[in-house]
Image 1 (tube, rainbow, N blue to C red):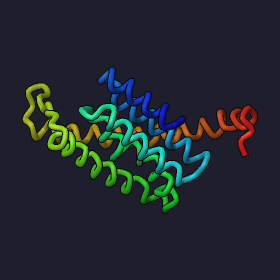
Image 2 (image 1 turned 45 degrees about the horizontal axis):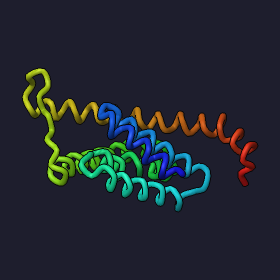
Image 3 (image 1 turned 90 degrees about the vertical axis):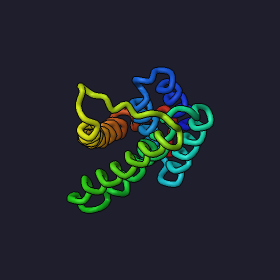
Image 4 (image 1 turned 135 degrees about the horizontal axis):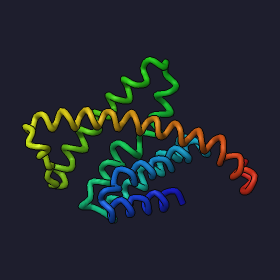
Length: 169
């Protein structure tokens, strides 16, 4: 069910291109919920199946690549990273995020052949790349915070209700 719902979110992002990253982030929230409810092995399965299904259904979209390399795996890795000492969390997350964003950029330009529009207020191309890298890092930090807040909300508000209704465990 989570794979189907995640793929449906990705469909929404594919239809409305302004929502592509938002749809990937919502789909990744499902991975985090599976991580909370049933544990690690199934989260990898949800991540891979949603990535494959999205790639098959929307092969010309960069969404599946973003989900495969960053949004889908990040909630899983976040769970492992946050078991380490607190001082290491941000550097590891940023290093992983920057590596994956570079692979997404290379994948969209060379694998999918999608052009990168680097025109921004008449600035030189190098300045646009620096601005994009800074904004991507800020977005990654906000995304990490988004996941933390929503998982806490799920655990405090929704999990007890769902446990009563569906009698989990």
